[in-house]
Length: 112
Length: 112
Image (cartoon, rainbow over all chains, first blue to last red; front, side, top):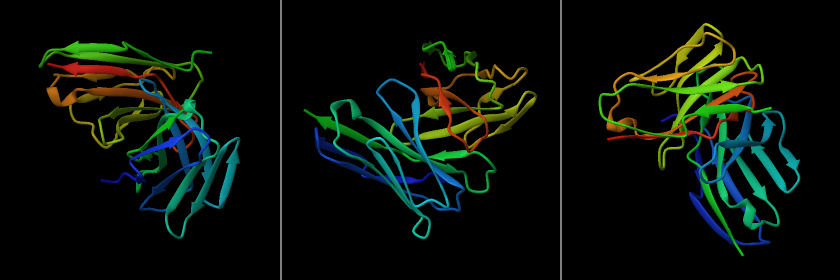
């Protein structure tokens, strides 16, 4: 499979805690993207980090990128019940021009 | 601004039937794509289009056809439905293939 991998597959935390999800990939990239999917809905783009960036912030989201290790992490700080969703990373498909390949996702559950 | 609209939201077919899943976007995006999402497998690219009149195969194209006669519309046709095509289908659009994608809310398809 050409898909990236996220870990953990599932994560359960208490409201107010931080949640960290990791993504690994196998090829060169020009950017890496993170998406959220609420149950029964389509994916929503969260943040894009370019290959020459190491860290990016958006509100309570912090994304890091380590191109030498071919990995990225998504940190959600001070989590809320509304953050309960699946989170996916996506990157350019190996040898596939401008197509995106999505990982298998991390299911996050934030409990009250 | 509706974004990406998919119809129908739910469909049940019998093996061997054909049908068309509709996708329309109002953002004047050149790039459109179809994915299927199965449990534990993330999103897999079926077909994509980089502009009107241009389509190409993704990772899992067998059993599906597409056409792109206008910038706005990108229908997905199941030629002869099989139980293995039971899945949730998502249409997405973006300005370019490796840029943030805008997703519809999906079509949940069951093949009996």
